[in-house]
Image (tube, rainbow, N blue to C red; front, side, top):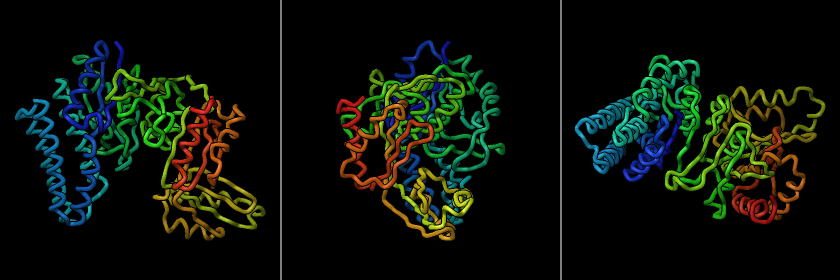
Amino acid sequence: MRTLVMKFGGTSVGSAAHIREVASIVRSREGSRCVVLVSAMAGITNTLFEMAEAARSHDLDRAIRLLGKIEQSHLEASHELDIATPDIIGKIREIIENLRRRIHGIDLLGEFSLRVMDEIAAAGERLSSLLVSEYIKCPLLDARKVIRTDNHFGNAHPKLPVIKRNAALYLEPLLESSDIIVTQGYIGSDDADDTTTLGRGGSDYSAGLLALALQADEIEIWTDVEGIMTADPRIVPSARTVDILSYEEAVELASYGAKVLHPATVRPALEAGIPVTIRSTFAPYGKFSTISPGESSGRPCVAIAMRRQVMIISIIQESMTDQAGFLAKLFDIFGRLGVSVDLVSTSEICVSVSLDKRLLFEDLLKNLEELGQVSVADNRAVIAIVGDLLRKTPEVLRTTFIAMDGIPIDLISMGANGINLSLIVQEADAERAIRGLHTAFFEGGSR
């Protein structure tokens, strides 16, 4: 019997009607063993963070109102799904009361730890999974029993050997008695049994980890779009679904802003040779994308992705060419301060790097100024042109520069793997650049 790991995102479980659709999709996989991971209902995780921040700011009334909204949305969904039994209502209220105690404690202290925030954030998945499992009428497994992590709260790292052992101990026996199991994405626990989270978007990661532990036949990622698109359809209405692409292409697209898939998802799947499909909950029989071991799009450009809120930092040192170890000193600063660098460009006297503007620290600039003159270009966006045959197709550069005519390019970089050509432009020009590139590669005869 095939084993499927099916992950449903927040929009997929965002209402009673959507949960009914999820149940229909899961039941359509009759003949397979299905491990169903769910995210929190759409907007709930953000509300939980807002609630905790309100409590920390001693705005307890606002925190209580936000908690009331969370409780109401889940109670209403349970009634609409006709599962509002005393047992289910009691379980919802138990989670809510625990949150209430937490926010009172935060208000009293005026601060809270990442450990406490992880416990609060996990409530969204615990509530949604309760509704989904009860509506499908199948066992509910607490993911914290299986997904063991370190105690790096807020962005915990999984312990794969322990996860495999726990899957055999807790998950496999359930699958012997029921073909459908519901559990949570995003959350886990450390060795002290404290709740941890895998970082925002970590539900996809959870799916990859469980698929690896179970040696599943396929991972299905269910979201609100029909697979990975050739560009963001909100920017390019003519964008279309990519039928098949390689793991490497998927990772590059996810890393550069394609939000359909979490970059870490494909890593455990790659180790186990497990294909990943990305499908739409709202068009279950529509188009979808497949990321499969050994496959390739066979295109110079399979899709174009964009990430906003980027900045470029340039360090000018006229005697740089005579300084052995200059780059080592430069990157030692980034390493010591925990700042991740994206793209790098060097000349005889200047090194430019791009990074997420939200990671900029005063300490970083002070340290860099010890090496040379520092300048910062803010309000930038990075655009990634991704394709397995990119490097092997010389006309890609010509097509790119023709499409970018009239749009200033601050930095250009060919990825070391040869499948990613990245451009940094002013954020105000980014959408026009995306549309021009999409027309050139997908609508203007270039293939």
